[in-house]
Length: 195
View: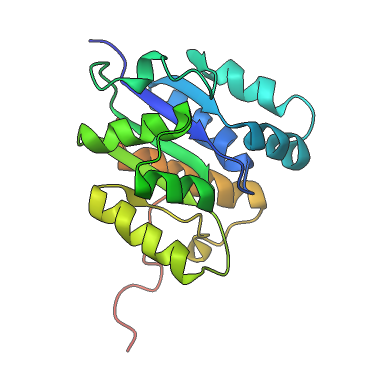
C-alpha cells in the first residue's frame, strides 16, 4: 500500500512556522508531501523563521513544485492525492480560492481539491477580520474547504510558542484522517460537571 500523497501549500501570511510544523506532522503521519510555496511565503519564512527555513521545509517534501508551474502534476484532478493543507493561508489566497482565480499553482492545486471533493484545509491567518474576509471564508466553506484559523488550545496549558504551533499543525493533519490522531486531546481534569 502506497503512502498517502498530500499537498502542502504555503502562502505569505504571518505564521510561517505553521508550514514547518505541518510538514513534520505530515511526515509523522506517513504522508508523501508535494510542496508549493508562494513568493511572499519565501520572504515570510526568512523573516519569521530565519536563514535555512525554506531549505528545511523543502527537505521535508517528496516533491517541490514552483508556484508558477501551472503544468505541475498537482494542477490536475487526474493525479490522486488525499488532500491539501495551506499553512498559513493569507487573505489574498483565501479570496483567490473562494473566487476560483487559479492564477498560480498554489491556488490551482487548492481549486483541484474542491472540484474533486477532496479535503482542503485553510489555516487562515489575519486579525481582525473584515466583512470581505468573513464572506470569503463562508464562500470557501460552502465550496467544501475547511477553515482552520491557527487558534491556540489554551486549555492544554502550552508552555511555549512551539507547543501552540505543533498542536495547531497536528489538528490540521488530523483533519485529513491519514493516521491515528497526532493532536493532544482535551482531558477533563476536574472530573465532570462542576456546576
